[in-house]
Structures are given as C-alpha cells and as structure tokens.
Image 1 (cartoon, rainbow, N blue to C red):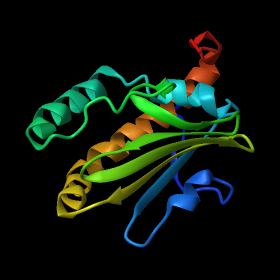
Image 2 (tube, rainbow, N blue to C red; image 1 turned 180 degrees about the vertical axis):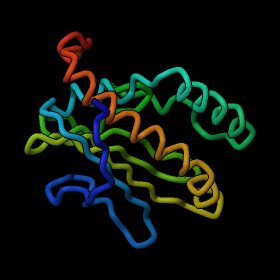
Image 3 (cartoon, helix red, strand yellow; image 1 turned 90 degrees about the vertical axis):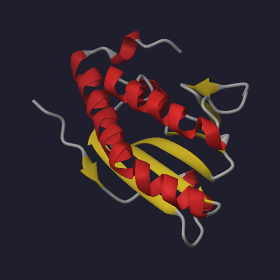
Length: 162
C-alpha cells in the first residue's frame, strides 16, 4: 500500500509559528504515523540516493555564492541540520544563511507525522533560490513522509540509531 501524503496546515501548537513574518514561506505535509518526532526526523534526513544527488548538485551550483553546504557546527545535529528544539512531539532544525533563514519542523500528533518548512528570504537572491528549489523541495518532503510511513509499517523505525 502506498502511504498517503497530504498537504496540510501546520498544527497550531508548533513552535514554528513563532517565526512567521509577512513574506515568509511555510509549507506542511502529513502522513499517518505514530512515530515520535525524533524517530521520524531521523528517517526524513536519511535521504535516498536521488535526493543526495540533488543536494550535491545544489552545493556545486551555490558554492560560488558562499552558501553553506552542511550547516554550522552545533552540539546536536540531525543530518546536516543543527537541532534547535527536540522533544517527542516536535523536532525543529535548520540554520540562518546569507540568503535566507530556514527551519524544518517534524511534528508527531494524534497519529500523524507532519513535516513543515519555514523560510525567511533576506533578499532577492533568497527569493530566487527558494523559487528555483521549490519543485525539488516538494518531491523530497513528500518522499520523506512516505518513507516515515513505510518504515513504521515495516517495523524498521526501531532499528534507527539515536
């Protein structure tokens, strides 16, 4: 069975709402899953090969502009994202860069896992960057949540490293 990933509103209790300002980008998707947010987040950042290839291409194309590849150093990271908040119900990770600030929220609530992305562009470069990556972002986000649902269904979520 193919997991059903749905575009949705970010739940009102998400800490990501506190960052919202006029002109910011926010999208959110959900899938049926009872996994706690940290487990779902580990699955989400375990990108498949095609997504890793897109990230490598992004890094190559943006290198001349001085954009970060792996995020800044941090005491706790999930993938290459520094963790800002981590609890069973929500993980928020991301960082500020020259062209934009972004955070990703992975939230677990009422048998659903939500994946939301907030972006605050600083300038025209940030807005153009966001517009150019948006189709790939949507593919990666939807694939990530489908992998969360499949991992839970297949019992693989308990085998993830901390």
